[in-house]
Structure formats: C-alpha cells, structure tokens
Amino acid sequence: SISCLMFTSFISHAEVTFQGFASFVGGMTLDNDDDSYLGYENQLEYDKNSLYALQASSPMGEGLTVTGQLIARGTENYKPEFEWLYVSYNLTPTLNVKMGRIRTPFYMFSEYLEVGYTYHWIRPPVEVYAAQVTNVDGVSFLYNLPIGNIDSQYMLTIGNRESYSDDPDTRVSDYKPLIASNAQFELENYTVKLIYVQGDVTIESTGIDGPAAAITDTSFVDKYIRFDNSTVVFSGVGFDIDFHPVKVLFEYALVDFQDHLLIADETRMLASVVYSFGVSSVHYSLSSNSVDSVSGLAAKATGDTALPNGFGGLVTNAQYAGGFPSVDRDIVTHTIGLRHDFHDSAAFKVELIATENSSIDTDATLVRFGVDMLF
Image (tube, rainbow, N blue to C red; front, side, top):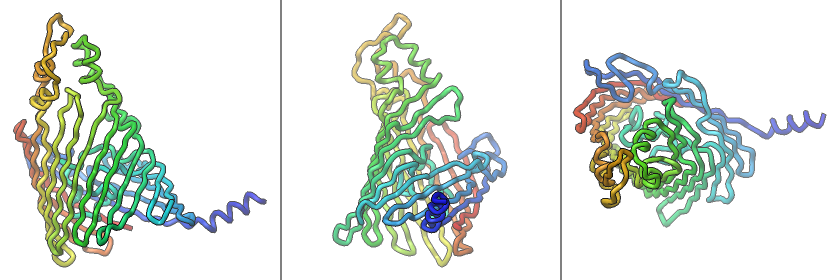
C-alpha cells in the first residue's frame, strides 16, 4: 500500500544513532554524629549519584535532527524520564535553533552536567551547581561568530518549567517564563563564559501562607511575601584555563530574589585546580555558598514605612524582616580527588570532601567513589 511504501521510505532515510553514559557511585560520611552532606549519611550508599542514560539522535538531512535522551537516576529508583527531547535545525551555517525539552544553561558545564566522564569531579560542587531545574520546555538559538582568533558562541533560551516539588504542601512553578542568555569565548587555552538567567517563579506553600496572614497590608504581602510570578535573577561568570598538565577552573554566581523578604540572595563561588599525569589526574576544589538572611532581608526592606501587622500594631519593613528566623548560610567546602582513566571510555574516581557551615556550626566529611563511562 501507499502507507507501507511511505513508512519504508522514511525508515531508509532516518538513521538513528544511539549513545549513552552512566555513573555508578558509592559514598558515605565519616562522621559518627547525625551530620549529612548531599544526602549521604554514616552508612555506605550507592544511589545518590548513580544514573544511567541513553540518547538517540536521528539526522533527517538538510540540517534537521531529532534528539531524545532518557535518564534514570538512582535517587528516583531508576525511573526513566525524558531529560532532552527536541528538534534541531540549522537555519544558517552559523545559526542553529532547538525546540522542545532542552537543557537549562545555568553553568559552565550545563550542557553535559550529568555526563560525569566529561569532567574531573564525580559531580560538580553543589555549592555552585545547586539548581534543581535541569531542563525547560521551549526554544533556544545558538549563534557562532568567529572574532579574529577567538571562537565565540551566543545562546538565547526562552521557555518554562512546570511545577515540581517533593513537599505535598508546596507547589513550585519554576521559571514561567524563563529567559536565559549566555556568551562563550574561546582563545587557544582560554575559555570565558558569561551567564544571565531571569525567570518568574510562583510558589504556593503553607510555609508562606503563615507569614502572609500576619500582615493585613495586601500590597506589602504581594510585593515582599508572596511568590506569584515573582522575578528571580541568576547571573554568573566562568573561566577555564588549560596549561597542560595544569588546568584552572573558576566560577562565580549571584542569585537575586529581588524584593522578597522570605529568601535572601545567594553568592556562589568555585575554584578548582587539576594536575594531569598520563591517564590520571588529581584535583583540589574550593567551593562556597553564602546567604546572610537577617541582614540581607532587612536591607531589602524599603524605608521605615509603618505597616499594619494584623495584630493591632504597626511594624516597619526592617523590623518585620529582622523578626524572621535566621537561616543564615556560610558554607565552605574543600574537595580533593583522583581520576584514573582505566579504559578509553571509562574512568574511576575517588573524592574526599570536607564541608562546614559556620553560621550554624555544622560540618561533615564525605568520601565517595565511582566509575563514569560512555558507550
């Protein structure tokens, strides 16, 4: 029949390429108390950073490609889900467009964030790489522009991420919409990346309803308390300098919650040095994440306007902000590790991580090890 002929013709022209990657990771903290880090406690666990992924790509000809990636994470009982699913088209030799489910461009390593084989850590330090939103549904444009000896790329992403939350009392609609732009410049051994992401966030939570109910000034609540299409801005810069056998990486990022009094702004930093010898390498990383909530929230308060507090009295913005429970965070983490490429497509890694939150006087030491592979 005609339909059979059409299907046969389609199959003959659509060649599907399969690729995959996997990480098998174990780890435990070395502390005898209740302190934990990255979900690890004082018992050996193998699911926190383990995952398995399969990617299928089908070039359709004339610059058109369809790509899908299924990923199964140990933390989700290896339940597969589509991490990527998009169509890509070369509008010009230097301009590419993608539409569908695509990676969120927050970091230097965003494009291959979970492909552990591509970097020296088992996972990039969470003090910087902390975003739970790893993909969005939308469209992105990538433009390549040589500038003399400099290879430059410019990306614009527009999309949204629907609701997600592990808390049954909370609904988070992250970044609807999300607008992200970044620029990357490469010159021989130097790479620089500039990142800017802005999104409107809506949060429905019983944790917000309580503070909101204590104030009768609805305009104050709408501006400073509730998250209803409220703007959050992520900006960052990254450097990669490779003087083999020494490589230096640096990332710095700011998360700005604008006027909101419930969440203070974050400052994130990562510096890493890698020394390679043969098929092995050793590395050291210093990462930090700081939030000064009491002073930071009070600083956001605009002036000393007296506001009804819902209990017959008046408070100023700063007084109200200063009355929030302290959730100050000043985390500093040291990571030392070894990577050994025992196969052309597989690497063994081991890391010792020491972290401390000086604001609340907690610390933990974590050892983890694993195998990253491509296939």
